Image (cartoon, rainbow, N blue to C red; front, top):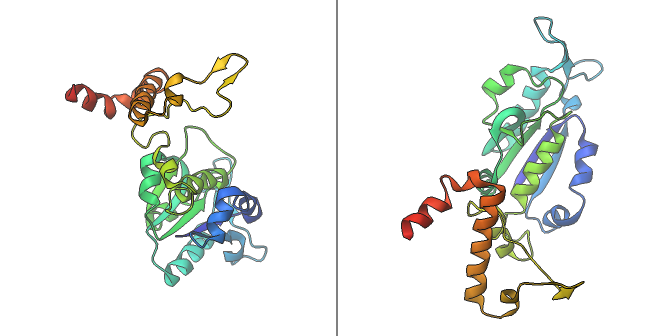
Length: 235
């Protein structure tokens, strides 16, 4: 997979991808991350990429020309499955969307900034608008990093144990069950006996039960149209 990230602050983004799993994924050749400084695509004398909005509103807007120049140049070089824009009013990012995007070959992610981008970019170039939550960030770089992290870890071979990704929260519409590791007892706090039993069928049943109960307590809305109706139907 190749991900082209369009940003005003490539150095900020570069630091995030130089550590841990994302760094190893790139070294393995499983993903290629390319940063594009939008200032480089400006035709103004000082490389400016923003201007005052028409109509006299407060704030600045990212100009249409440098964004169009960058996206069109990339699209001439290869086909992109999606051209993503990080926007507060976009579709809410979730695990299902991450799963879908992880099957892509090439993605463009445009990081919004200021008061956003000229609407003509959204109308003529963007194929998918994504929000990571109902709040506003200084820029879309953090949102882009979140999206890329969630997507890249799902690419086969990125994680040492691919089953780990399949067991993540939200993959089956539930949050993950509690997890424990050594020692089996600490300060009188014991690991549940079932996890030490060696009975894998009972352990899996316990984990499913715990996942359902934890979802009911913490994210009950997830059960409204996912696992719970099917469970009731089967019973």
